[in-house]
Length: 255
Image: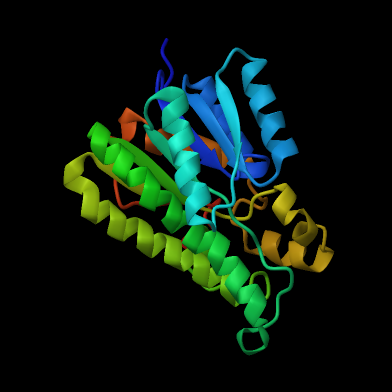
């Protein structure tokens, strides 16, 4: 039986670990050819190896998503390698190094978080969409967060929350702009997921206790649970879905 994205070309930013790696592996399992992008070359190459050793096709491109020229080159490399771009998971992101309240948040840290989490997503879309327009179709999924839907004092911080709210708004606007041109744009809003990026936060017993106390399912999620949602949104099974913010959060924001 053919996979959900059989024969399609997909790219994943932030593909060296966590949600990005899980999504790349799921795309490959479902029949897509992959371009894995990240600043972390070792991790990205490991993801590619995990795909190719199981018979899939993948390349790695090191890219800084805050650089317009780097992103443009990355999209060009994708098309040069595989001839097209069908699916894009704009997933690269960072969390803040500390959790001060809004009035105490460092300005340099604010700019760092917004540059990667929001500007990086916009830049990827800026260069993905023209290629998809040439093809007459394409699907984009951006990684937002439950922090893009609600405020999260004490377990997150203002820059991260602001950046993810921005991703949700950017996704909806682009979805409406290109809905009649064959391009679907959605975002996933993960809840608390066990990844290398969140490991330090989840190793804090007090913070972890607060998280679990708010989780209706009584646990955090896995990268694979997010990956399944992303690949479905990129597949033809979701052909009438655009502008959607899909929460994969164990019921967190339903409360």
